[in-house]
Amino acid sequence: MFSNPSLILSILLISASTACGAAFIILLIYNRRRTDGDQWRDPQPVIFRMFNPLVQLFSHYIRIRMGQAYFEKIHKKIRHAGMTYSLLPEEFITLRFIFSAITACFSIYILVEFNSFESQLVALGIPVIGFIYPDIWLKDHTTTRQALIEKQFPFLMDLLTLSMRAGLNYATSINQTIESLPEGPVKEEFSRYLRELKAGKNRRDALESLADRVNVPSVNNFVAALKQADETGGEIGEVLKAQSVQRRAERFNEAEKKANQAPVKMLLPLIFFLFPVLLMIIAFVMATKAVDSGIAPLWMANLLRVII
Image (cartoon, rainbow, N blue to C red):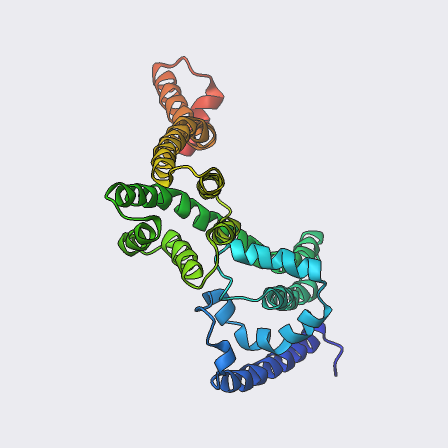
């Protein structure tokens, strides 16, 4: 009765889908009763909200078995992505295993239905891709966020410098500058920096926390310059003015660098996609004229007749 592998696979998949669906519905009902301990969270990304019930079901067991060093490593990646208040390290690790389990079901189906060597290689590689996909997504999100910070940070430096030169002190200038910034990661990080200052954290520690969260060279240089000004008793307004000029120069140099790299990056697509088409068109026109004039070989004339 159960000698057909496809039937066995179908029964297993239906059973697993039913169990997952039941657990998903139960956890959705459970998660609606949100406790006060979860109110600190920011909205989670869509990729995590889709599997949040399953993540909440298994993340506790993952946390118990995680080493402290590995926990800190994952937490640092999440912090650089700006998701400290959205995700926990154990939830991120749990999502890896969930993606691996989902992709493993597809691998089993491919192994049962297809017997070729290529399909077996694909089936073995799919769970690996499912396991590392959350890391790829997180790294891509971090890179995009850091690029946006690099783009918006010179604008913050200009506003901060103008406020200081207008006679405001450093704390008031930071407050006014943050209110004038557009929505984005720079406003989020510096708003958090300002909240830490108002909560009583000293400026040096708050700056170090800011640099650790953002992990962007321009912000690191800004933090280092302010710390040096505090230690040496330098004028903060002059330091901010020099930093503003330097950030603008760096942004201009980066734009110039990308403009110079554009022709090199376009060379490969031109060689593989545009030039062969142009050569084919030119060769076809030359061969047609050669056939019409009677100087082309017989095989070329027959080939053109077949093509036309």
